[in-house]
Length: 68
Image (cartoon, rainbow, N blue to C red; front, side):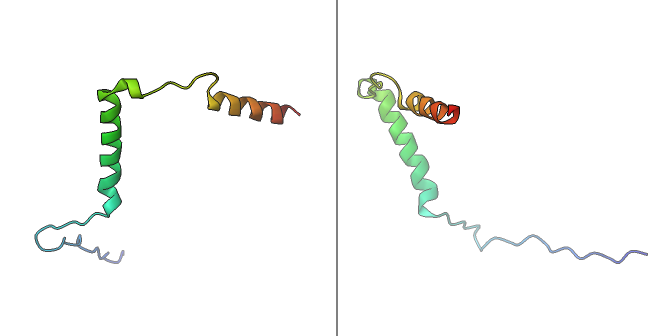
């Protein structure tokens, strides 16, 4: 015979359903949105990197180090 299990009822939110978020939970998406919006509105300011990209250079150095 199995024993009855006791489950807790879900905790009720504060009165009025108030949920508080940390400041960065709103600031980071707003900052990302504004940055992308500025790039869309003025694409001339988004300069492409001249020459070989830094990522390609880094990967080449990692390949050289692992080849030795």
